[in-house]
Image 1 (cartoon, rainbow, N blue to C red):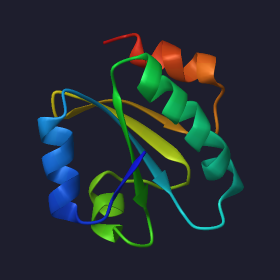
Image 2 (image 1 turned 30 degrees about the vertical axis):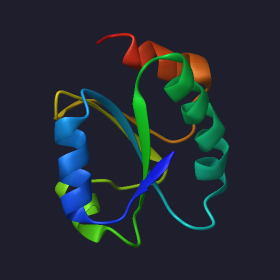
Image 3 (image 1 turned 180 degrees about the vertical axis):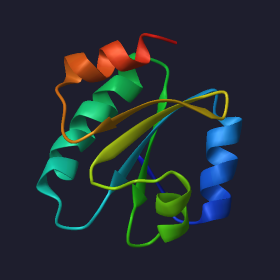
Length: 101
């Protein structure tokens, strides 16, 4: 899963990637670490790109997308926010989320 490290990279990525999952994370967040292999599996199996954003390194993205907890996972479709999940969810729940588009 690629780490997005600047606001420019974040905006370019979500607008040029047809289907993207962005996980907002922080250092020391155990649920965030547990979610990483789930999103990596989904990325490999479902033709969707997955990305990480560290909330401490990209506060502008946190503010723009009103992220209030970690992990927060946002699904982007065609550059627009399509769905959002807060907290750690099982793979099945995440698959239901992306299967809608």
